[in-house]
Amino acid sequence: MQFQIEATNAAARLGKLITPHGVVETPVFMPVGTLATVKGVPQDLLEELGVQILLGNTYHLYLRPGVEQVSKLGGLHGFMSWPRAILTDSGGFQVFSLNELRKVTEQGVTFRSHLDGSSHLFSPESAMEAQIGLGADIIMAFDECTEFPADAGRMRQSMELTLRWAERSKNHFEAHKHEVPWSSRNHRPGTGNRGSFSSTRVGMSPAPTQSLFGIVQGGMDLALRKESAERTIEIDFPGYAIGGLSVGEPRKLTREVVEATIEHLPADKPRYLMGVGTPEEIVEYSNLGIDMMDCVLPTRAARHGLLFTSEGKVSIKQARYASDQEPLDPKCKCRVCARYSRAYLRHLYASNEVLAQVLNTVHNLTYYLDEMRAVRHSIGLGKKASFLSGDRSSANT
Image (tube, rainbow, N blue to C red; front, side, top):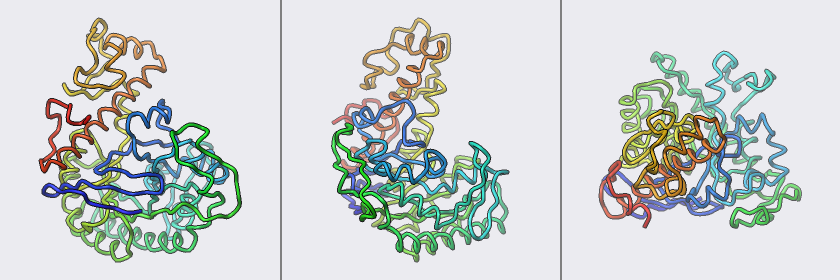
């Protein structure tokens, strides 16, 4: 992986993340494809929307269909017929979310599956083995996500554990990163059609080059965040993530932590803010110098009938849209706004039609991706990116 900064405006950076499966223009928003799918949207349509990189979830894929099965079928790229870049998280946040179903020790986290109650252990070593097997372009060190609120002792303890796990993650990754039972030579990045892939197992061949990112923790303590950043950098990763946010803290505090952490991260390496991103926030954090973001919000909100538009949020389930013949967003050029009325979208949702979730998700993803295109355009022009700046035509040039 290579990272190139093309232009800057104050703290904001316009860059390119060069991965084995294509170039990712940054700042970038990564749609979440938890189970090797962005719910309701086929891969060819994701390509049409301009998605450059997807996020997969190690915890869920480990449980179903299993890492070995995915690996046999060509890794995530071959399994899901996706020729572009993929990032996988380590599963640390998911096991953190299990709460009463997990036990944290120095070795790792013992947890019970939310599917069948079976017991499993995630350690830095097993998390690396799983992500190496899944074959994503960017993988994450195994960390412990600190809960909120937490006292000073707990935040220190959690940060220290994450640092020890970061070293173990890197050591195991460096020793085993080529041990993937499938060959990248059988994968020909193409249009996303099934014919572009071969999933034949060919033995233990060198894997596509993967990059392991470190994760900065430290709870909401700014001094601990600084220390975590500095000590994680000493371990030496090609990219750094800010983790442990969006765990119940006020949004103002989230920004304070992000802003205080960024200044301690290397300027020449990508910065990834994990799990954060209302439309306003992705613009705000891009201006602060964040290069990568992911969040389930656009897809989850779509499934609940909450849609983002240039005129504000629209809850399409409301009765007032039952006879509204206008497009969802008159300034949006997505296939949903170009074809369907608010009345029709409201009817689909009220009728519990699957198509409602599909169309809503396509629109929300378009909105987010257009927002990021506009952000990149502004940085390239030497201007500060602004949220919902009226005319979006510049985002599509």
